Length: 406
Image 1 (tube, rainbow, N blue to C red):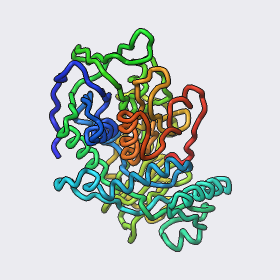
Image 2 (cartoon, one colour; image 1 turned 135 degrees about the horizontal axis):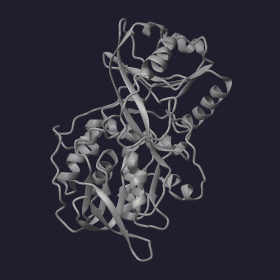
Image 3 (cartoon, rainbow, N blue to C red; image 1 turned 90 degrees about the vertical axis):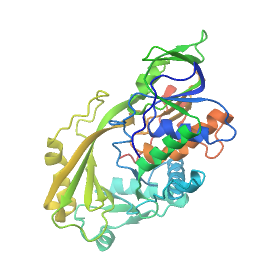
Image 4 (cartoon, rainbow, N blue to C red; image 1 turned 45 degrees about the vertical axis):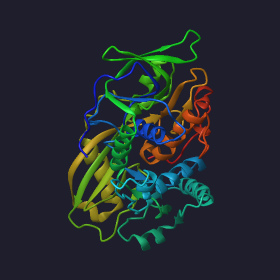
C-alpha cells in the first residue's frame, strides 16, 4: 500500500477519543473502536510523521512468540497468533485483506548456566499450562535437530515450533490503519504539544496541536511508542518508559543452512533467525541507556565487535558471511519491569496508557488494542483480563517483571 496522505487539521473541535500516535498501537485502538458496534463515538488519531520512517512499527523485526515468563503475556500472544493466522476473518471477511500467516521456525533460547537453564524450565512449565508447545532440550537434542549449532557451551535450550516465528506486521498495521479510516476514524498529520486538565486535575479536557488548534476530548489514549513519557508529562504524569536503541543486521551466508534457523537467542544477548534467503540478527548496545527520541545513528563497531563474533561462534557455518543491510530502531522500554503499561491513570481518569512494551509490542497489539477499545467502550476488559498491566503498580513501585525480554 502507498503511504496515505493525512490532512493537517482536524475537522472538528471535539472528539470522544483522541489517540496520540498513529503507528501500530494507535491504529489498533482506532480499528477496534471503529469496528465495535457498541462504540458510536468520534475518534481522532494524531500522528506526527505519517511516513512512519522512524516508527518502531516500521523498524521492527516483526516476530511472535509464546515463550514468556508470565501467563498473561502468553495469553496475549496466543490471541495475537490466532488473530494473525485468521486476519481476513478478524477484519470482517473483507475480500481485500490478504492471508499473512506465521512462518513457524520457533524461538530457541540457549542457556549457558544451570541457573539460566532452571529459569527456562520454570517458564516452560507456565507456557505448557497455557497449552504452548515449548520443550526443553538437552544439548545433544539441539544438535540432533539443528546440527549447525555449536552447543559446546550450552547447558539447555527452550524451543517452541508452534505459532512462533515471523509474520508480516506491516501488512497488519496497514490494514488496521486503512480500515479504521474507512469506518470513520480521522487521522491527521500533526503533533500534540500540550494538554489542559480540569480544575480538579482529574481529567484531560483538551489537547493543543502544533498547528495551534485546541481540541476538546472525552478520552486521551497515549499510543506514542518510545515518546510515551513525553506525552504523559503533558498530562502531568510520569511513566518509566524511555527509548532504547536496538540494532538489526541482515546478512548473507556464503554457505546457507539447509534448514530454517530458529530465532536463536544466544546467552550473549545477540539473536538471529532466517529471513528469506538471508538471515537477520540483532542486539542491544553494550551501553544500553536512554537515547534522544531522534537518535538513530548506528555504531558500526557493534557488528564487527559484538554481533558477528557471536554469530560465527554459535553457527560455525556463518564464519563466512556478508553484511547486506543494517538499521537502528527504538524499543519503548519500561525500565521498571519490562512489561506493558495499560489502562487508565488512577487520578487523571480519562488518560489511557498503551505503552512500554519493551520490544514485544507488535505481537501483543491485537490483544492490547482490543482490550483498550473494550475499556473505552464498556469501562472494563471483556475478552482477556489485562489488569495486571495497570498503572497502579507503577505508582506503587511494585514491579510485574517479565523475564523473557530480548
